[in-house]
Amino acid sequence: MDRHVAFDRLHNFRDLGGYRTDDGRTVRWRLLYRSDSLGKLTGTDLDRFQALGVRTVIDLRYPWEIAARGRAPEVDGLAWHNLSIEHRAYDQATIDPALDPWRYLADRYAEVAEDGVAELRQALEVIAAADAPLVFHCASGKDRTGLLAALLLALLGVDEDQIAADFARTEVATERLIADWRALNPDRELRWPGYGRAPEAIIRHFLADLTVAYGSVVGYATDRLGVDEALTIRLRERLLGDRGPAAR
Image (cartoon, rainbow, N blue to C red; front, side, top):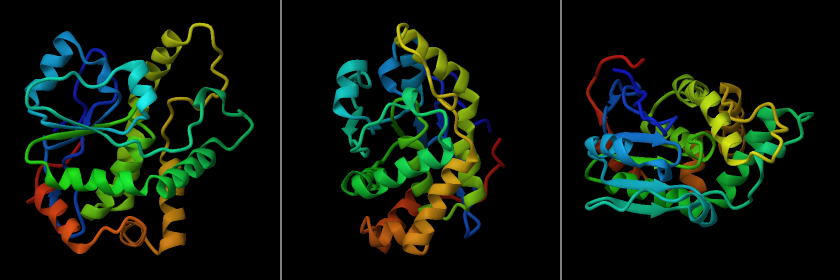
């Protein structure tokens, strides 16, 4: 099965199904999605989205981003949660090109992991409680979305190589994300050459940092987020099935 779901205006909508876990199970297909901003959903794209049966949306953006760019359309039966996990805003377009870009972003992720404890825990609770397909997203579906995806997959028992590969799949959308930025900012210069990029190095730095600080990614979730065994079991029962077809 192909995890990328085609839309006209969404560039980074994809299925988190198909990943194998440490107990031999597989993340279920067509149940858990990650995406760039659903504020872009209109017309035929909205029809395609509704056909997926999604009933829960977790929007990880700041409220001011939502006010400026819109939220997921209000449709019957769709629950929407705004859980802004990032508390220290920064402008990626203006990152100093001389910095190590992947280390810089990993350090920003570390800030989110420390600042967004309440929102990250709540996001996991919402995912565990959902009884139909769910999607979580930020603006580009790369950083905040990538962090939550990595944390969730780790709790499900997915190994780092698969987590890193999932993170890097955003690179398929990089050119379109840059084009969107230029269209929205015609009078600005895109100074940072790493804009829209998502190499594995970023998430590997971040996961390594959590391991140094907490012993493992699961240790971070347990010690910092307060994720207990009961929540982990609920996540696994909801999202894991038997062995399935390999992912592309």
